[in-house]
Every structure is written in structure tokens, then in C-alpha cells.
Length: 361
Image (cartoon, rainbow, N blue to C red; front, top):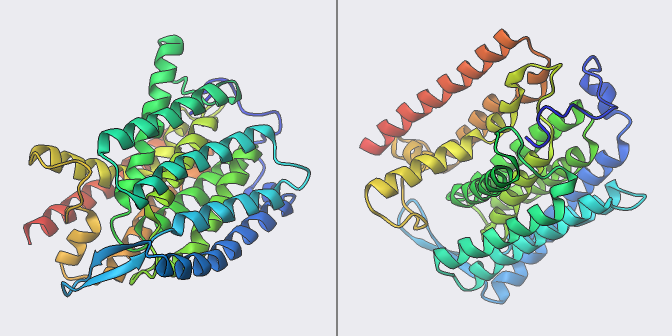
């Protein structure tokens, strides 16, 4: 969303197919693979350490039994992210990428503090806002600005901060079921990475690919029944990184379809839609916004008779179907892009009907 109308980088060639763009990027593949393997191994270590240290959370099983599950999965994901970046940027991590990683770690620390000792929602949101505002100050000259709306600097600052906070908290709220946030986050990061590479935005594409790999490596430990939770340290940092890198990407230029700006909305549609619906229900029922309940999409699919694994796999399928067109949206004629977006809206409407049916059960 950053730099909308400013044009793509000089290396951008809309005629170049995806494989020809990715082949020269062997370091990216190496970094992504290292993040995947590193997250898998680090999660096993963190899981044992967290259990031994009593760093656990209580979760209710479908049969009503309470199980104690270690926290700290986000620590393993962040460690894998750093290791993958060090390998992918073998000549040295660019200053902009380094700042993004450090700010992501700062958001992870906010989440880790909440995991260790839950904070009041207002305090938690304030700390998130401080991190995002710091990101705006540190990355503004690197394209961390939403410029699609008129109004100059004040509007750009406000919309940028609100967007990143929205994505950050959507991923946090979406971490309501084993494997939900990690799996959908990995899919979203992969599709956004492909989108970035298609338009020659290598730094953003590299970090997103590494994030996707790290989440994929963590997922075997988190898939239902989870042996470790991502925790706020993970869900907040993943949401912050996705929000930040979508802002730093350029999604539209005069020579492309004007509907290209919808790419990040397609990739993040599932967590944004689910979280917005849950928040709306809680506000209507005058319930605390950040208190867990059984109103998420997976809970309603389970109420319709699905198992936890089937419900989470349905989320993955929905996320993939909505986001798979994002990397090629720039190359579609306007009328074809409009049809693709209408199709996505139709899928979300069908999802809303399923959610309504599940809530009546």
C-alpha cells in the first residue's frame, strides 16, 4: 500500500513469469528453508523448557477436560526469522530489513510480557501503539506510509498506524484455535511474498518468505492437538510483521490494474473478516473485546459437527482460495480483476452464512 501511484522498482517487468523471477534468488530459498528447519527444532527445545519452567497456559479440550500447554512458540518463530534473514542476506542484512526485524522483536516482547503476566487490554494496546508509532518514525523514509488517501502526512500517519494495529490484533484474536494463526499466517506470508517478488520488491519478499517458512516449521508442533502455543509473543509479532510489510510494498502503479491494491486484503481476508465479526458480536453483546469466546469460525464449524483438525484445515483452504490470485492480480485486465474480487466477496458471504448456522447450534 505504500507508495501507491509512485510506480514499481526499476527491476519490475510485468511480462516476466514467476519462476524466472524466483530462480536467481537461491539465498532466499536457503533462508526460508533454514527458518523452517530452525523453527521446527527450536520449538521442540522451547516446548521442553517452557514446560519445565511452568510457562504454560490452560486450554479446554472438546470433551471439557483442561490441558496445560506450554507457551513460547513465538520465541522459536522469532529466532528462526532472525536466522533465516542472516542466511538470506548473506552480504549483510540491509538497514531497512534490520530495523523491521528489531521492531518485530519489540512487538514480540510486548506479547511475551502479556504471556508471562497478562496486562490490561488498554495497557497492551498502548504498548502496541508505541511500537507501531516508532516503526512509522524509523521507517517512514523507507516507504512505511499508506498514501492511497488524500490529506497529506497526518492522514498517512494515522491510516498507517491504524492498519498495522488492525492486522496485529486480528492475528492475535485469530489465534483462538490450535494451528489457526500459524497456518493462515504462513499462507498469507507466502502469497504476499510471491506478490512482492512479482513486482521486484526483493527485501519485502525475502522477509515474507522467511516468515512463511518459520511458521510452517512451527506448525507441526501447533497443529491440533497443539503441543505448544504461539502465544501473544508470536501472534502479535507475526501480525505486526505482516502489517508492516504490506504497507512497505507498492501494490499499484499507473500501468497496472487499479484493483491491484486489494492484494493484501485478499491475503489477509480470513483473519481480518473473522476478527471483525467476532469484535462486532462482542460489542453488540457488550462483552469484553479481548476476552475469548466461542464465536470464531472454527468454533462454529466444530458446532456443525467438524473435528478440530477438519475445522482448521477448512480455514487453510479458505485462506488459500482467497489469496491465491493476489500474485497475479496486477496482470489482470480491470474487468477480470473485478470478477476475481467479486468471487472473493461471494466466498466471504458464504462463510458468513456458515458462521450464522454454526452459531445457532
